[in-house]
Image 1 (tube, helix red, strand yellow):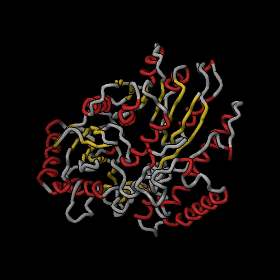
Image 2: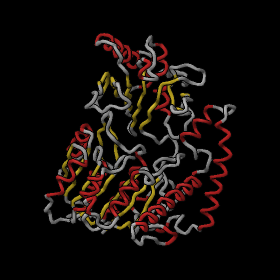
Image 3: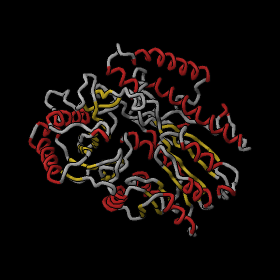
Image 4: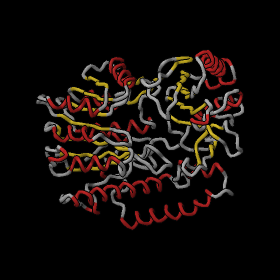
Length: 484
């Protein structure tokens, strides 16, 4: 299958700009080459393990923990990821065989595997970064950065992230004080009389910082704060100080479009659990994807690599093979990016998303871009989808795209898809196919199982296309096409 339109990348040194997936480098790569690449990566990994010793720099140790492929040339990173995805498909084939399904194809895979599609940008590609507050290498508990170590081992150290290849300089500017003119969140909490909140039960207040940016220059800062026993007057004082710091103090250099504050007594809180409070600026930031404008709320899901997302969505559009009479189900739709980018080629878009604010964004995005052939439902997919499909009588072709979190799809969602005869084509977009998504794959493909209420005809994996949305890490996004 040719996906030429989705692969017109600016990375001309990797792939020809108009090459179909079937002709990209890697399709003809020999097994010997792949084994050599994998062996080389393992050797490099082994040689860098010494960098996690105390004598190594903290910067190296953080880079090894967060971006373990950072030492490899980018082409070799892609080969490492290709080998990883090949193992995923081999594992799936083995599990299917255990269920009595003859799924092994060439190379022991359950379906053909295309080469990893590279990211158009490999450095500073993240549009969202989360920075923690904890003790730094010098023991200062008001250090803003990323973690080396684990809570279980009680060896966490918070290391400044100004050297990380995947984080843009703007995010580092808002978070840290390594930049001469940018004494921002870390500087603010070091000036504050309040302690950081490292362990909830030990007290303290200042917690993580989330920075979101867009290609248009918008920057959103979201600060999480544990209120402990502070009253409303004391909270108001802290919010006023924070606003003053970023609007008329040293933090003005960050030029924040939006500054949010969230009081949270849990590790993670949605807007419904604890509202995001706008202290300064605009309530939303805006991004453009495939010539469409998208509004982004503080906790709305948006692909972390914007330029990579454009390539991914174009490929999804081609893999759907959706005609003008097709209805597209966009499950776990976030702000509606996938569905809205494909709205011009289908009859109708139906999106489902658990985050209410993201659904509001999706509806706004549709209206702003003049797209009327869509509807978005707020709620858990396992509650909304079965009800939606149980009475489905539309004769138009129905194609489903699912893009769940690492936790995968709830079994009731898989059951609803499996038992809806109208869905003949399914695209599963997974950022961790070796995890809970594997369970979903098996439930989609297994023989009918009355015990699990899986009565519909099983799906068959037809094609796998990995996309490198996370350069320098071991992760990539896998698009798996199922048909029946």
